[in-house]
Image (cartoon, rainbow, N blue to C red):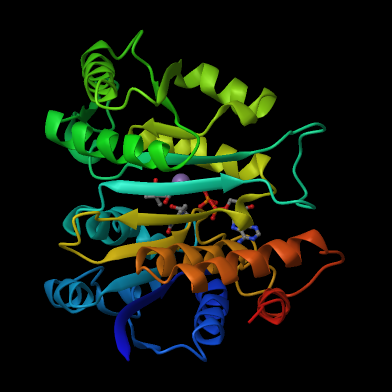
Length: 348
Ligand code: NAD
Ligand code: IPM
Ligand code: MN
């Protein structure tokens, strides 16, 4: 039998609530299979920082890296908490994991399931994947501020784009498009961000030569937000930079039934480091601790995890259970009631 070592990082806010349901699902879907998950829980996040002053130590990193995969809930403490003023849990924990574990593909599928409460009157079929670059762009922390707090302050945040980094994520996106509907849309802002945008466009054009079957398209990010609302069916695979991908995928979540359904995988395709699966949403302090959060995104992140591990049948069973549940949702349920309802839909 196969043993998979899994790091579990519930995190802050609704993170622990939704991760509990994800763990229940993982247990249920593998109950009769010959794969066993050996889980290690890591109590990281705002609470840990307030207690010890640590966000993610080298020891934490080493222990997490020793696993085959990671599940994360969400991070981000209570807004306005004065003791978090100098902490940046998002950078120090989440981005540190993504960068150190070289999660250069941030995979964010969007699918409109029948019965999902989307805001569009006539959405048509929605089924696309955003391949968001995960280790570069404006996220790297390259910048600084001088004369802080004065009228002459200057604050810079430089977007870092390397040919190596762009090419590898673009190649992943083309390979994915080959396995899907052979359509790839580059989203950027090449009309203004000419240096990085020019390189992204050039690399997409070059890699496209190796994929004559893939229809390549380009949209400026502002126009992309229009089409995500007015004609989301036009998208199959979107490849884009770290920040544009962050923004587009919250919008994509909203048009496909809400952020509570949107799952993601932070993938290290080379397999050098464990990949990390998490909902697209955050710690939702406004509803935390009330069993109000929808755990579907966390449960669909388990489906992405299983697929990544090559457990395709188990992954499909999770997705089908979610699909069956969404088709007949009504009334309000607690987080754990929704988890139980989805698990009850699991087919043999
Ligand atoms: P958020 O995603 O936490 O919340 C936005 C809105 O969506 C809120 O109204 C929230 O109640 C709702 N929502 C989110 N998840 C939901 C769910 N599962 N079910 C029902 N409703 C849900 O975004 P935010 O408010 O911008 O950020 C809150 C904190 O989370 C911040 O500290 C932010 O940095 C952090 N954050 C973390 C991650 C992550 O860990 N991956 C992602 C996004 C934001
Ligand atoms: C996400 C989040 C993170 C991001 C933040 C919390 C660093 O918004 O996973 O989408 O911007 O990537
Ligand atoms: Mn985000």
